[in-house]
Length: 113
Length: 115
Image (cartoon, rainbow over all chains, first blue to last red; front, side, top):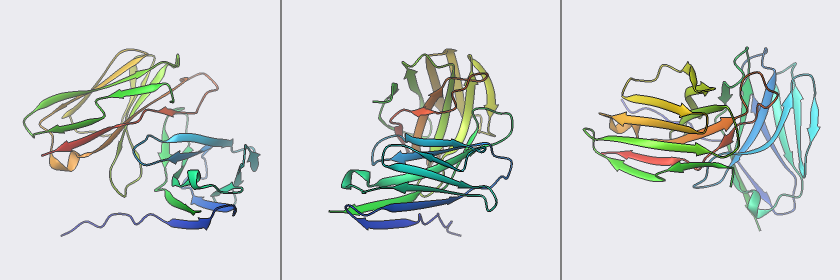
């Protein structure tokens, strides 16, 4: 039979609005989380990371929130711009394997001028 | 630019061909990775090399053969691939085990089509 692929979540916003992209992670033992942005035709680009001993971290126009109780991660983008249009992935790391990241499925963000 | 380059950017090959993908990082990192990105699927880790030693093989079929001659270069040798192997193959690097650097820097990927 035909295999069914994932339907990526999508988020459409107007330029200047704030965007919130959500991610549910799988392992309560995960100790490190990263958000990546992937534009069409390019590899993923690092946005911001957070360790499990923190619940909030801010960067330039971006904030990551971590809720370990419900295993939820969010990325907030302030004053979203058309250049922010991309697929956004969260990734988690757990165990002693420093380099083994498990990626989420991604969210498509579209910013309308 | 992330400091990680991949060649070729696009590759079309038949199922009986043998080809190789190349990755080079100019960041002084000690760990390198191969990922497969298929349409509508999460990124799948294939292989991890740390200080030129393979530390992870994520149940990848033997038709994919990695090679890491030094910490700056990583290859993925391909032979007798299947059409379902068509995907974007991404290389990444990071500082490596025993360091504080967890962030992985990705190359632009090689878009592979298997006919």
